[in-house]
Length: 196
Image (cartoon, rainbow, N blue to C red; front, top):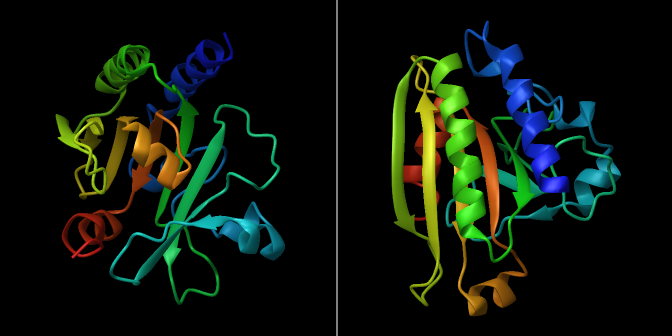
């Protein structure tokens, strides 16, 4: 029931995005692209956040605020990205996570529901595809992506992730939906540089 309520709140919150001109008008748990992480977390909380360590290139850093105790309204977990050498921790990517462990079908249904809501609210180049999960060598992992490229190249993504059992154990992760906001430059780095 909690997942349904969280997703319903999420869908209803999209209604406030109808006047959004660019990615900085969007928010996840109040966090906007271009804001400082210091507006939402203390330096101590930022230090406690778990970094994503599988990037080969170190231009950007992503933190998972899994172990930081916050009362998020819609999401169970938050991740945020910034340039590694940025002392202001300016957000270039932010994602909200809702757990759908061992229930990829339910995640996909909610994803479609949210994506359809997006289709009515945001105009841009729509994307929809399914890929294997990077790093999950079992072949069981998959990610179902939907989203919208805004006119300036920024990106809103709605992904459902399903992982193999071994990958889950190694990475201490669960199947989930992630709704993400990425700047054009950060998205380019993720696709073309981060894992090379």
